[in-house]
Image (cartoon, rainbow, N blue to C red; front, top):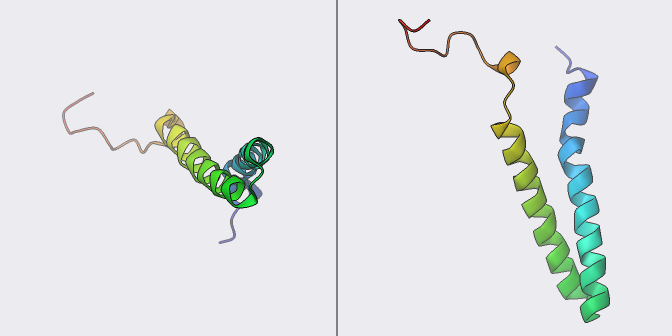
Length: 77
């Protein structure tokens, strides 16, 4: 069974925006401090934080169509 195109592109929905935000933060820190090492550290931290935040937001906005029908306790209608 091969994954659909949507499933193959899904990781880039997190990585692309996270990388862009990390690059912007790295550039801003570099121009403010003029130290490449510090800018790289801040860019890496921003990248990781963005990935975690985006993944958490996706998990909390679980649409009803992705939930199985049998997750309710027995006896509840």
